[in-house]
Image (tube, helix red, strand yellow):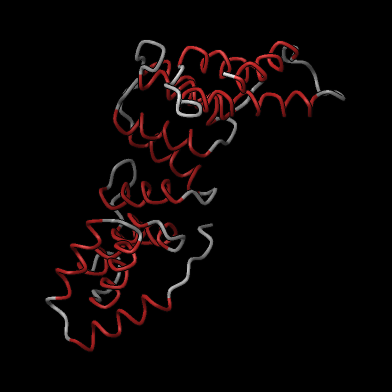
Length: 246
């Protein structure tokens, strides 16, 4: 608890929210520090068991200063029932506070709550809206989720071309799940011309990233390819390099 006790001294020294002024930067830095300590406590510090109650103290103090990371973490604790009764409505409220500040991970989680109807009525259109906000920031998970919504036609008209475009943004960053999904699109000719070599390449990259479906799909499609096609796909895999997702 040494780190927690040191940080608690910082907490007690921080005033409530004030107008912009000469101490604003220090206040923001202290809130960031509190959010970090809260995560250490929530996850278990130095091998110690998690201390959810104390973590919540730090998160709330930082959240009161407008810290988006802490607001998101409080939402996660309500969603998981960590140190508080599980409460999806509270989770949504805290996710929204962080999401409204542009915090991409909170936008993804809020989109997921709308997609699944947890804490809010199910609303695919709002799920798409929040995933898109995070996707536009270059978040690979959000881009993959948005591609999936286009592929299924949830909250947007079904559009395989759009699905491919969003999967590709995430796949180009090296996100293994998106690489595997993009492989499926090339295998089946959805939104792109059918191309087993490119399907193999994306499956292979997904497999290299640890995706088990990518590995199984690569091995399955290899049985339908000629040695020359496999050689070309392996060459493409070797030459591939990640790029920015924006």
